[in-house]
Image: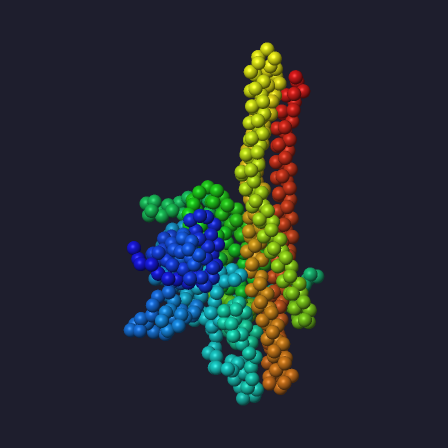
Length: 560
């Protein structure tokens, strides 16, 4: 047993059962044993609560040794001064970043994994679900030029003025760590060859992503419990079948998790739907497996319906590759993708139409207010629906059972004086009692037909809406750079060509955000129409079953 260790939470985690505890970003924690179990630590938070939390969400704090630790070993996530530094919570941070709840070593899937989510790119959600990234990455596939102090990289020329647009001092803001600041300021060089392109078109509602040339759907079915190593390791396998091939592949949760992290790393300005949460305990229980399957289906529907995400080469590899060797090759190729983060912006082809930046800013502000209100409303409906589920499973069921028992008691009392008892009436009342007991069971069963599906959709949209504040912040940061560059041009401190370049790149960010806004609205209308129709159909069918049972009881009295 390892000794207790201090740690700091990198990300917020919300517990979902009594074995887990919630932790907040930057919260100080105590870990009871540094050897994680299934990717989970057991420890204590600052409120004295004890339980499990994900190992990849924290960093262990170790005392610095003057003899054998150098400055380069200090994690960029933050220093604790001259006495302490952060280390990843496991010996192999790259493997641990993908260690999932399937209780499996990553080595048996790809023993030479070259993930880019290393110490400079810790896995796990930032404020909007996107991975926290250092603004200047050590990833050899993302090429930032060395930046001389206090001078723009693209200003190093005797023909240019010596001033620059100021950089954001908060190096952990989404605008900086996403690389969008570097893109807007011209610090992301053009690649020699860009093999992929994503087009934004003008439509009546505004800029939209160009539809995928080959739209498709994908089913997720047959979750099956599998074992390996003679039953030592257990996991759930899902049959995934894309419509355009018809050939199924079998994927585990960790494969979905790998794809999700690749999406977060690549698509900076897109609201990537969140995966269903991991769970440390009870993950092989039937109810949990069914819930995860439903939510993976919704996640997949959003992936296939998105014109950009659905065309991603890594997604295609996930859906089609059935050969282990080819899987590993494709996995490494996706992890070496150069067009990620800031470089993804270079793949965008925007319309030639002029857009006034002030109009765009007003449109973004309107969308920001809309998402805030929708987020509040989704949370309210989630709370009401969850409470209704609780009543269906508990209160409603018990009340109808109590009423049924009371009718049964009346029927039994009528039998105590045989000369004056009416067998037909007693039977009718007794049947009525059993009917209400059955209705109580119908109420208890009903959530899995309607309310659970509503909660699934609401959960998906909570994740999508949580992404937008940081994505909107990217556009706000770009607007600020345009205004600053214009001021500097007016003061004679910057060439007009340089300011025009910043404005042009800001247009790219603006078009991308507006296209994502349009896609969100279009998909929202589809999803909420389907959700409400399905709920009302199931409610009608439910109450029809209740009415049928009541009518059968009523007919027994008509025969008296």
